[in-house]
View 1 (spheres, rainbow, N blue to C red):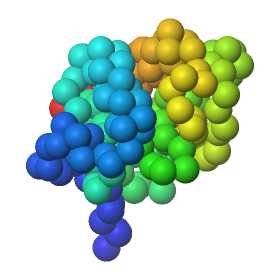
View 2 (cartoon, rainbow, N blue to C red):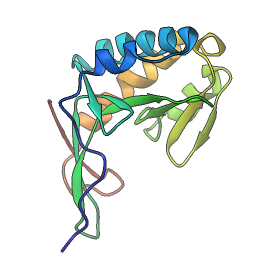
View 3 (tube, rainbow, N blue to C red):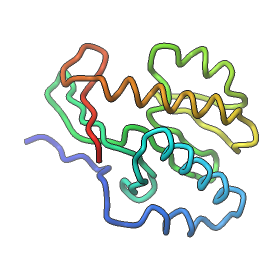
View 4 (cartoon, rainbow, N blue to C red):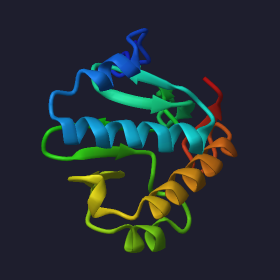
Length: 151
């Protein structure tokens, strides 16, 4: 029996989650990111697990047969840095990351300390392009990992 995915869409209000962020600057950054990602996807925010604000749904299928759902793109406003999910790893992402501003990357995620450190127009372009690529994917596509559907 396959292990069940830990991170799933919840019924908890993403807006209430964002409103409860205690640090005013981190809360403001999270609200701005939510607006930017909603615009890029045309999807409302959904809370995935306890701390990921996601937009849209991406169904993935790995070569191993494991499959599941995850947000098209999303973020988690953590204390050390805000983690951006699904915003890199597409053709042309490297060039955009080079223009983004102060950030780090790791294991497919982009980490930013504060939005003032990055170019929001570049970040929006990254989100739009990442979503466009994911929405074109089909399950089992080499290097693609899945197919996206609306939420």
